[in-house]
Amino acid sequence: MENKVTQIRVEGRQTGVIGLEYNIQNIVEWAKGKDDEAISTELLKRIEQRNYVPSTIREAYRKALLREYKKYLGQDVEEEALTGLQVVILGPGCAQCSSLESLLRDVMAEMNLAGDLRHVNDVKEIGRYGVMGVPALIINGKVVAVGSVPEKKKIQQWLSDASVKMA
Image (cartoon, rainbow, N blue to C red):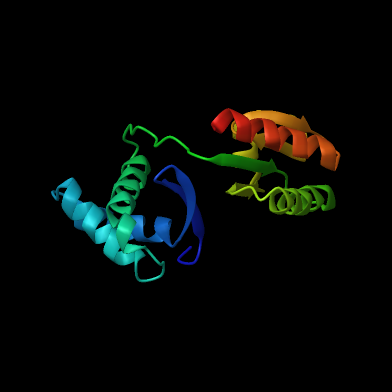
């Protein structure tokens, strides 16, 4: 668990953080009676031991880490909005899922598109999306394909449409 990577939002972008759950669990007792600033500062200090945190966005990391801590405690928190192109592949890691991920990486590179590409393979997390087949492709929150690997031209069109809507 100390090496587990958890995805969190920092400045609207999905960011992988090594050891987040481990550090949150190990700070709970220490944090009793402390204010949000002290908790977020301590979490950042611990996270920086295993993760690179650019100095220009340290404050954004502190806010994101505090938000994750509060979620862990079961408190209501307001999620940070996602920015930029968000592409999610849902699938347990089968050949089709891996093929779709590879195809998406190639298409995004060919189109020179920057964006967050995540492959969710945890069955419980896949279930939260409510899709009934895999692989599934979600672009900017919209399910565009379920149960098969779409043709390259179709993926290019979806990504192009999503990029235009963001501009």
